[in-house]
Length: 182
Ligand SMILES: [Zn+2]
Figure: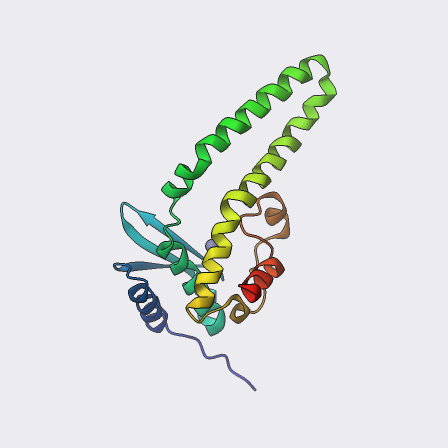
């Protein structure tokens, strides 16, 4: 019979502190939630990492998740930085696209069907060009910190439907390949 040794929250938070110090970041707060995933935020200059309690049962996944999220903080991947890099431009483009297609659809109503598809395609292009490079950079940061994505084992559980609709990260295989070639 095998038993899974669960990492304690104190040890996990000590690891967060260790990587934060190595990155030269001031204190990083840790918030625990359900799930097996992680997220990182910088709000008003304060850094926070959100960690799924499920990672405590998988030391490798915990290490990779923490290192990836510290990578986002160390590399300055804040919502503000993303907005500066084009979220407003993205919204303007989406609006122009919708208006343009609706104008055409007045003449040819069947084209109204193209509006949601065009918006979805535009959203995916935005995620690929603006979010995915950040995710791969955070993966590379984790690998350099000694916690490559290969430690994480299985892909994260998010629903395939949600990922198909809103692919916030590159696919798992693509991430593993990118880390292996880095
Ligand atoms: Zn990420």
